[in-house]
Image 1 (cartoon, helix red, strand yellow):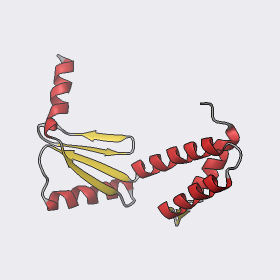
Image 2 (cartoon, rainbow, N blue to C red; image 1 turned 45 degrees about the vertical axis):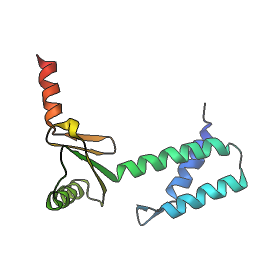
Image 3 (cartoon, rainbow, N blue to C red; image 1 turned 90 degrees about the vertical axis):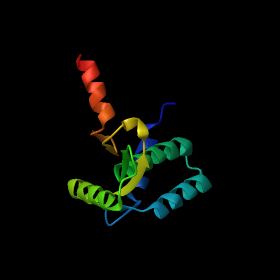
Image 4 (cartoon, helix red, strand yellow; image 1 turned 180 degrees about the vertical axis):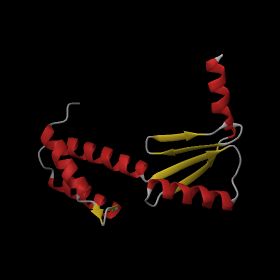
Amino acid sequence: MKIPKDAKRIARRFFRGCFTDEVFDEGKARQVVETVVREKPRHYIPIIAVFQRLVRLEIARNTANIESAVELPETQRTGIQQQLQQVYRRPLAANFRVNPALIGGVRITVGSDVWDGSVANRLETLRQAA
């Protein structure tokens, strides 16, 4: 589906209006969607599609998905979360998950950034190098 330029422009303007003190406000985003659906402006479906994509990217940018082979102790969870917040210089929501396929180590994903310190990744790197 080709999205008109004016729909993209409008969606970006709505998205920028969803920030309060440089922090994304989900309540404002809900209000935007409700208003667009209720008023049905021209190209309202592409507007919502672009807006939804921008919101998804923003949430991913502010969420750290942390996978480990075993359950991490609370002290390590807190330490990882604090280090990520220092690196990104903003508060991040952290989702911790156990993934036995990693064998050992940790894989961290924040938006499009991936840090993979898992044993499975190292083994795959060695396999490809051989």
